[in-house]
Length: 261
Image (tube, rainbow, N blue to C red; front, side, top):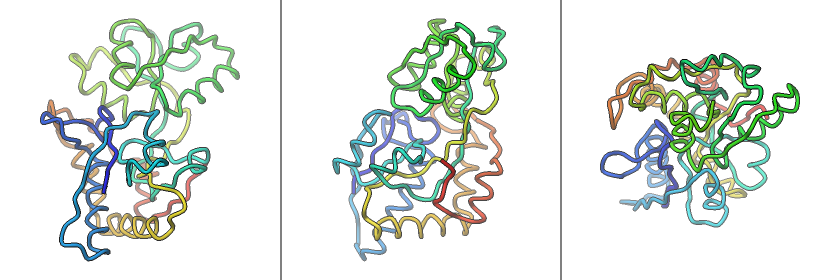
């Protein structure tokens, strides 16, 4: 069993001090692996890990280099043409992070500004759509990953970094001085995060969805959420202190893999 993971999608899937992948999505994936082992009646199931980025994660699943992708990946119609997804374990909204002294409060304040997104993320299209509607004349930049994108705001190379809100809170929590940065902006979209798997394998997906529903009904997902979003986590003891939103609460009560596109 091969799990694809991210390097810096805090606190979902990132490298700990020992360079091993940890995080909320990783914990959920390991529980799914246990369910697979139990279903196949295996005494043990070896787990291998492969590092992916925003642009290599889908090819890793499509080409069979990984069985599960455990990161911060949005389930949307375009991606479902190539891959499948389990029941979502998180719902994010796209916002932006700026320097506290920037004066930027909302999207209309970005007119003519430099805005960075991370390569391979869904926020690129959102920004292009917003740009078209509002005529903001944005100067779009692209970072290789979330760390690089946030670094561009830190250094002043970009005025704002936009991606899902929780990833922005994660970058802020791990910054040298979190007080210098603030997450702002109306929500651009709702992003349902789910574990990604190969398409056209209904038996495999059914097994994973059954286990996800059990993890939700038994309270295990809530416990994992509290562990990663309400308490200090490695490597610096950062605490996102992020209450569970109503979208995830509802999905835990009534688990479904159906999402609004």
